[in-house]
Length: 117
Image 1 (cartoon, rainbow, N blue to C red):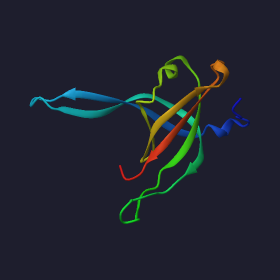
Image 2: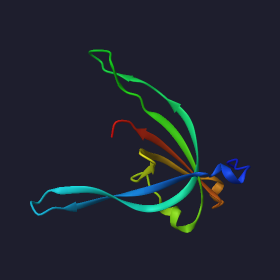
Image 3: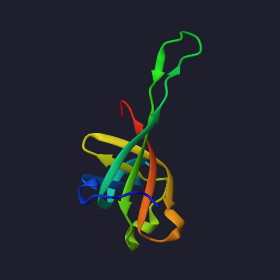
Image 4: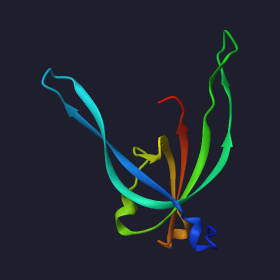
């Protein structure tokens, strides 16, 4: 089970956002974000890597993976990998959601930070 030993460990306020796609008057599409749920989370960095361009060898990306632990409730059960997490000015793309042993106590969400977006 994920370890949540102290009351204050879920201290970071995050917002999980939906992607909304709508058509505009010219027949194109616009993308927006809406708040799905706000929760308090424990944020843990899990790793990072560097990606380099094939031709020039210069660094083009530096993605970091984070784990977010939030309390489970019914509305959080419909979180999908098509959503993203907003934490302050930072955003993270959700890549994995785990309801540990299907006990409906906590959700562990793995996400990659968007750098430069």
